[in-house]
Length: 172
View 1: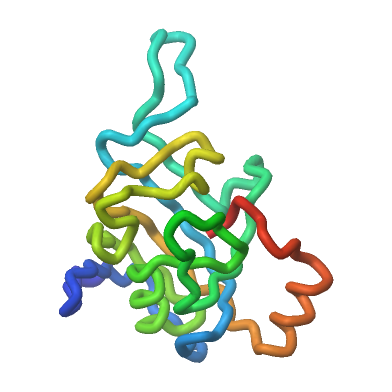
View 2 (view 1 turned 45 degrees about the vertical axis):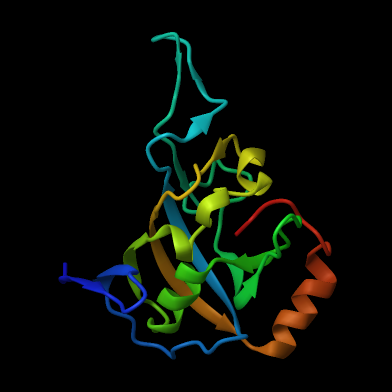
């Protein structure tokens, strides 16, 4: 594992695996996997019946085939959800955008995204409560990501027309 790099914006990146493919550009749509760990103070609707308490340490992974939203997800670099809007398929956050722009296809990185590049002073949107958790206000986001591929504009448009509803309240 390589050393942690802290970018000028405060994003902490640790390269877990170097990529060998192309690097994406702003505006391009990519396929990526992620593993997300909720910050301290996250809430959950998951209940541990054996210990009779709610589970506050949540991990979510697109690698988990039992999850209905498994598999690599599409992120359009630079496409962020406007405040008070529903997440659409392909929306991102600033920290993911910055990390993805520094990666090549095949790369895996561990990220610590500071609040101003994540969900800011409002915390996570209702998108995350759909999955049973909310990132508290002003909390960092800790995740691992893998850049699987870059989708060219023609393929991306075809996929979005054929496979994806306009507004989907799930996926990144």
